[in-house]
Image (tube, rainbow, N blue to C red; front, side):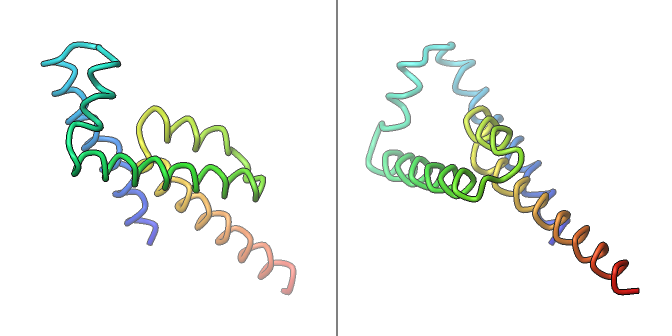
Length: 109
């Protein structure tokens, strides 16, 4: 799973930015045009709504659990996207679980 999360976080950074850079190269850094493009048609609007809802649920989950580095995952979500923030969060949870298991094994020995 570790490799899947790492690949997901890297791909979740590179692929969206590839498309964002193409958009900004042709349209310039016009935020209003970018927001309009997010809702340009039914398909884009549906995907945008799905992303916004999923991001909001992720943030609520992080805040409710008082996760360490919540601010980092929210910053990554806003600046790169959920496709980077979520796999990175899952990777860190996997590592924390592995560390906890190793500590438990050391205490029982």
